[in-house]
Length: 260
Image 1 (cartoon, rainbow, N blue to C red):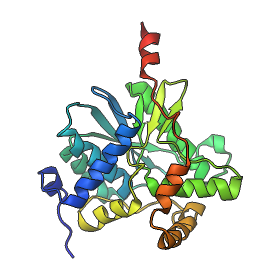
Image 2: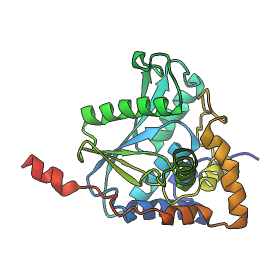
Image 3: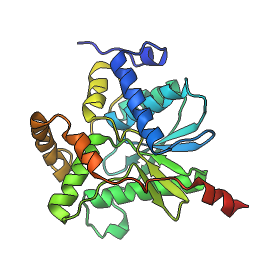
């Protein structure tokens, strides 16, 4: 089946299920007061379906909100595992169509400080360091990541089963005493929605270049979550509701006081 152009969504031809996706993203944003008027958001973009879907939702909902916010998307292109060059112009056009600035940063995936060690945690930490440095140098306080409800569920299981902790990724996560926040606008969205977007629309989704893609613990947990959902379709939502996110707030007032 030929995919539809994502430009149909930008032009306002939005089917009900896509509108629900955008509204569910908005529910997550509003539940934790993630984005306010005139704020600047740095989007962490991998080129995968989730980060591209997040950018789409944030761009489309901005059109009918009574507030405005500025976004810039940053994609880290690992020198050791580079992105297919054929996708670069497609990604640039995609973010241009969404009215989002876009930058590709070529970085080393294996810094000298790793001492030849490498795993998913170290890779994630390296990516986060680059994003934090970019945010600090360019004046961003909010970094948006494309994690969804399935990611939260899988992270909970990883921590519970392998670290004996009932913990997960937070919808809003504070760093450096409130100077920087990671926000996850799609925290209430199921992964099946971003998969459907990828299947039906011509989003310029890049095939993962991670050497551990499909073999890491998170990938192995996905079929377990799917099996659990055959017994109760609200498994993901129950895991979410079992956590206490009451402290997930952005302390905007403190920053204002510090600057006066």
